[in-house]
Every structure is written in C-alpha cells, then in structure tokens.
Length: 74
Length: 310
Image (tube, rainbow over all chains, first blue to last red; front, side, top):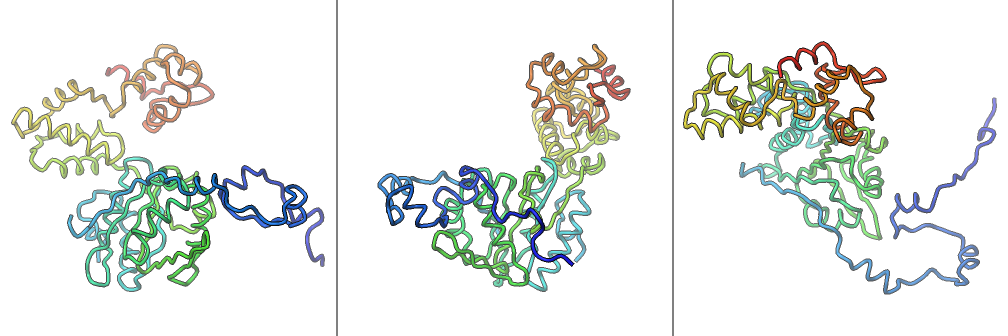
C-alpha cells in the first residue's frame, strides 16, 4: 500500500503579491526569512511605521451604512 | 407554535415560514440559532422575513432583540467592521444582525468569518485580529445573511451557513399582498385578479402596485375600485400586460418584426449594452416564456399573442 504524498505533490504554490494582499490586507503580517529580508533591504529589523503609514492608519474609514431598529417599538 | 403565527403579516413563502418557525421553536428552548442565509431574487421579501424572524427573538429580560441591518457593499475591510459595527453595536449586546447583499463582503472579512462561524459545538468564539480579541457570543447574537447572488459567496463561507431558499409568489398571493396594503379600498368582482396579472412575480412589485392604487383612489376620493378604474390607472402610469416594462415591450416588438436576433443585434436595435439586455430585460421575458434563446433570440407563441394585445 502506498503511503505519503502522491508523486508530483508540491508543498508550495505560486500566487501574486496582489492576490495575497487581497486576502490578508495591506497590513497583514507575513513571515519571511531574516536572511532574505536582509538581502533585499540591507536592514536586519522590520521597518518601523513611517509617517506615511501612520497617516494612512489615521485616515477615517468610509462609513458603513446600517439601520438599527428597536423591534419593541414597531 | 404554528408557522403562520410567527409571521401574521407576511403572505406566501410557506416553506420559508416552516423552516424559520422550526428554528424559532428551537431557539426558544436552546437559545441557539444557526447562521441563516436567505437566498432569493430581488423583491421576494428576504429583508422583511429577516425582520419578522428577529421580532420573534427575545432577550433574557423578555424584550425583543434589537435588529441591525447592514449593507455589506459599504463594508470596506475588517478594520471598519470591527471599529464601526462590532465594538459599538454588537460586542456584549443581545442583537440580531442582518448582513444584506452578503456576496459583497470584503475578502478579509470573509476570511475572518470563516474562522468566526466555524463554531462546532461552542456558542462562543474568540477571534483575534490585529493584536485584539473580539468575542462572538452566539447565544446573545444571531447572525443572518441575505443575497440575490448566492454564486458569489465564497463557497467555504456558504458551507458554514444554513440556506433558506425563497420562491416566486403565485398570483393569488400577490392579490393578497395588494389587499393587505390597501385595507381602505373595496375591489369589485374580478378586479383584484386582473390586477394580479400585471404584477411581476415578487412582493415588492405587489406593494408598489398597491401604492399606485391607493394614490388613484385618494386622488379621486373614491375607494371602490373597478376594472375600468384599473384600466385608467394602467393608461396613466404605463402598466403593461404581465407587468412588463417598456424596454421589454421594445424587445418583443423588435423580435416580432425581425423574427430572430443575436444579442449584439438586439442591443444595437435598442441602444442598450449587451449586459443590460441580458441582466435587466431578457430574464423576465424568458421567465414568462415570451422569448426563447436557441443561439439567437426568438419570440415565442406567447410573446406573439402579447404583441397583438399592445
């Protein structure tokens, strides 16, 4: 009886950065290797929030439309 | 309790009433309710039924629960939902929440709901997002979803919801709705049946027709409504047989004149986009068996008869 993963199985899939962002949001945290991060940024630590990030966070969210009905009054 | 007793003011939808009554009976004993997903075409009464369902849910203190109706297309992301809705209105409160047009939920909130509504046996769920924990208490909070476009709901979320399907209304049910909405009007013999033939198969159209009749009677200061009165009303406000619109009438006439047409040809004749013809105008004609699509659009014998009546 065969066991384990089927032949040709790959543990990883390729998706676009845009698709990933759609699902977890622009601020969602993704774990990456420190070595890879250092290789592309030259920095050893993740970035601190910049003034642009803070400004974006402080921007008011669009208003959600809703109706709140007290059913005791109808 | 009998199913009609829960919904005394709503006409038709017997299967919906039975299913909802079952969950109301269960709620009374257990305090639990599944996450309902009301599915049906526009105007069938999904919101009214959700509200009527909520009217029968009582808090521990015996008061009726507050009903919150949300338009999902205005929810942009998790942050706005938790900040504007969950924390001020839902958290710790006994409340019923309707997510209307739930196919338009943003993707990050859809993902959050996959976790939140994956409850197994527990009536509580803690959801952690952005380093904060939000507690959902399903004995205090009842969640109802509604949509016209069930195919656009993310399938794993749909799997977590209990579907309640709405059906079209019969002419008799549509007549009842018109009568219920115009208690001040007396309809002469055969009049209400004649009116029902001009109502599109949904409750909203029946309510709209009732309002037109009410206005007509008010303007004439005469509350005895005859078939002749109705013909006059049809002429004044443009009510066509079977309740078809003027654009639908143009489609029938175009097909009657040319025999058959492609979608592109039809949209060119009418000066409308192809998607507008498909989504807004053809469906009702197909539903009423007035046209058929067999590669090309063709008028049926029913459609020909209706054209003769114009």
